[in-house]
Length: 156
Image 1: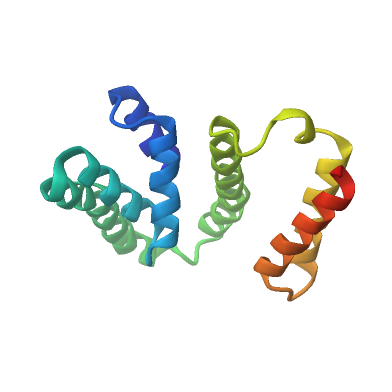
Image 2 (image 1 turned 180 degrees about the vertical axis):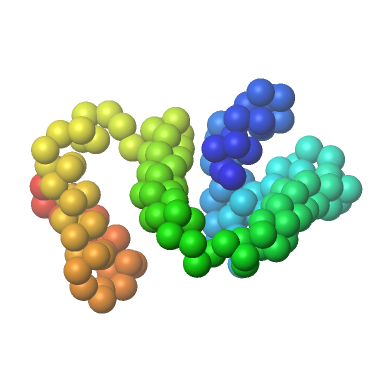
């Protein structure tokens, strides 16, 4: 939802890129899912309380209705091999969409980029952090701290 929201916000000129980055940061720190939190923040920024309420319903209601409609039909066909195969095919695509949204957001907002993004050392730090997260039970906050220390060692 974040890329869709970003596209609409840019198309209508509702917020600057920095304001949208701030909205994502605030939404991420708030309890609950990021997309509705961000929509509420953007709606409030544009039209006050009424904008926040409208944004919440606009982002939540269509998805809720669609999920309920799909659930009615999916219950009847969920055990069919073709449906299970389609589900396995969709999983990597959804993962790719999430990765694409994160990378695009980071590049557009200058959170990554410049001389250290595509060099071997930066990729090494990224893959090392990814491996630690996938292969151990170390808390992500510790991985972030260790990555910062590794960045000091590698780039200083």
